[in-house]
Image (cartoon, rainbow, N blue to C red; front, side, top):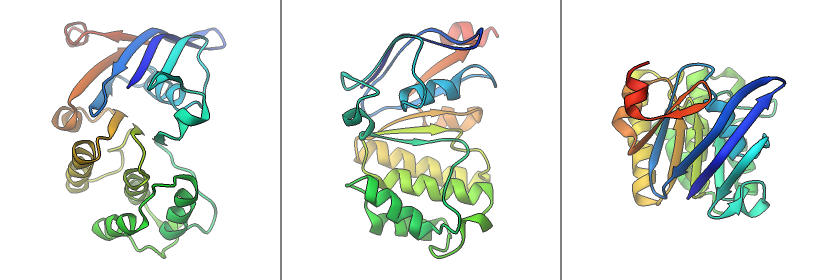
Length: 213
């Protein structure tokens, strides 16, 4: 279970997150919705340990999110992915296999095939959507308990978004994986998410409050 307890984050004098409290139940697909600049990506980076909160606590299975044991339990997929020059999908898989001991290379290669991605092609030649598909495959095969996704549907055409929905739903159901995603693709979020939250100007709103914005 991921827990945020009165978490705040400032950048200079700008209060990005204001006393955010949130519980993400195990096995759920939790969708965090909000307009651009609401603080969604910052919240993910806090959980991933990239940023430290200025106030409050973040716990993963009761452990501080900054402890190594907690970090090994999740895969963070940012909106813009980073990789080495001359990387191929296969070398990307080798990299994650060295980092995540439960990474299943055979399944990763199967997902590359499902996405029609050549495992020996240069990643630099891929479109944004193709890169997103590759990293989704890596994220699913890493064998972690938690998956943090920033704008997972961005750059994907409707057919691929549907396939990604199916893959993520299957992962949550059959692997007991907990998925936290932020996205502005409201229709896809409504279809896939079992739990939803609403972030507005750094604060968590109820669905009733969100509907009035």
